[in-house]
Amino acid sequence: MEILRSNAGSGESEIAKFYANKTILITGATGFMGKVLVEKLLRSCGDLNVIYLLIRTKKGLDPSVRKEQYFKCVSFSKLLEKNPDIVDKVRVVKGDLLEPDLGLSANDINTLASNVEIVFHCAANVRFDQPLRPMVMMNVVGTLKVLRLAEKMSNLQSLVHVSTSYCQCNESVLEERAYPAPQNPFSIIEMVETMDDAALAEITPKLLNGLPNTYAYSKALSEDLICRYNTKLPIIITRPSIVTAAISEPLPGWIEGVTGPTGLMIGAARGVIRSMHCNPLYSSTVIPVDKAINGLILCGYQRAKASSQEKAPSKRNEVQFCNLCISKKALTSWGDSIETGRRFFYETPLSFSLWYPGGSIKKNYYHHLFCVIFFHYLPAYFIDFLMLISGQKPFLVNVQRKVSMGLKLLQYYTTKDWEFQNEKFQEMSSQLNAIDEEMFDTSVGQLNWETYISTYIMGMRTYILRESPSTLPYARKVLRRLYILDCVSKVLFFTLTFWFLWTHMDGFVESGDAFIRSSLSSIYHERNNTIHA
Image (cartoon, rainbow, N blue to C red; front, side):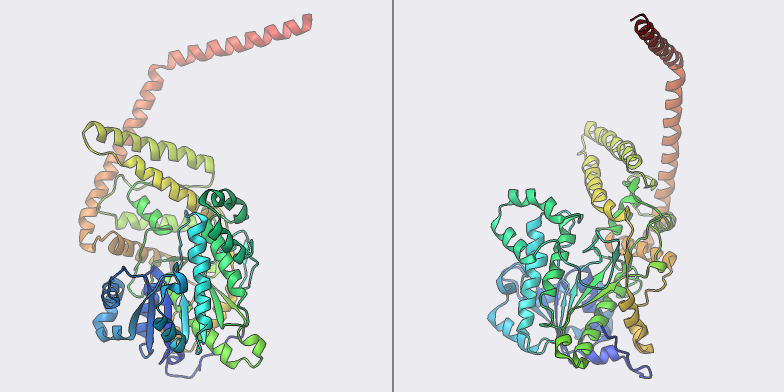
């Protein structure tokens, strides 16, 4: 893959210049990454022609109403303050990846086929706990439908597919290249379209072939499917790692959803999660969403430029790969990130917590299991019992069951170490001119983790939990009360334990003495019987 240098002496953005007057199609625009992508394109590439958003809408709902709802998201607030008319460049197209022909009307298909030049395929089912059928239908069949639509696009210059760094997580080192899928994607598509749920559930573990879940499996199949379009379409497959809160764009700390590290932080801050199975020395392979999105935009630019300047027709449309990841040497460990997060949570606590935040990560699974039983479930059953006898509806045991399920899904990723090679991504970034370096920051060689984690926590507090900075004084009072309650509870627990052991000491000693005497006597008699025999 030849990396093209921006005009180093240029006083303008080469990337923004490339996207000027371009017509773009985005799938998955309502997702976390999709919203940041739309906002960034409108803000930094405002001279683009049109962005078409393929969005599933309720029956009878006018696309203009859906568009109005879409831009009410806080992530667009700064953009709309400065340029409210920019939304005129966005058009909502009613569609659905699960429907034939993406649910598009014949008129919409013709419009997209005639005008679209850049495609960002971000839509995906990203849940780790889904059965095989919905994953394959969305992530594999949906991708196939996008590829077939792209084949009709007469002016297509670049198709950016969003995959994941964990699509081949049974590989300890992920290179920026194609990998064979566990099975033929078309065979799997036929299988999920014809087999019943019970048969699919039975065969799924064998199909996964070492992959941890159907999400990773479906992404591996999707990549293999795309590679079958090699030389047919100008495609680049991007593989972000764990995408987390923004550093600065569209808003510092902006985050959406409670999956992955965000859910862990909320659970720990609420005092619900007291233990996590994790190797503290392994790398926390996260990337801030704004760096990942800048990477997507950069890949779209580079892929189109590479095609236009490639002289050999056979190489013009070769599928390319780019791992959108923080460099290995710049990553922080799980242990360091969790300790840093704990410190900032004590400074910026939540207004509502069930208990004082505490606990720790456990490298040993059985140590973790012991702590889950004694510090997750036993307190939950006790509190639910108190609520039941006081006439209130118990809920904490159900919360802990969901927490345990989430921890089980995540522990695969926190107990293994990977190296995601990103030489192409770094080389792309190094070729940007000064304007583009600032506008589309993709530097992954270093990151101030203390500052970032602090921003992440404040963003989570503000945008997910809806707790404004004005609530911090009250939250700190709550934390102090919980700390006192936690200390008193520990003192009472150890005092009662010591009292119980002390008052029953004689009984324990007598029982132990009798057991030892009985055991020795049995051994002595067995030995004598053996000698006499």
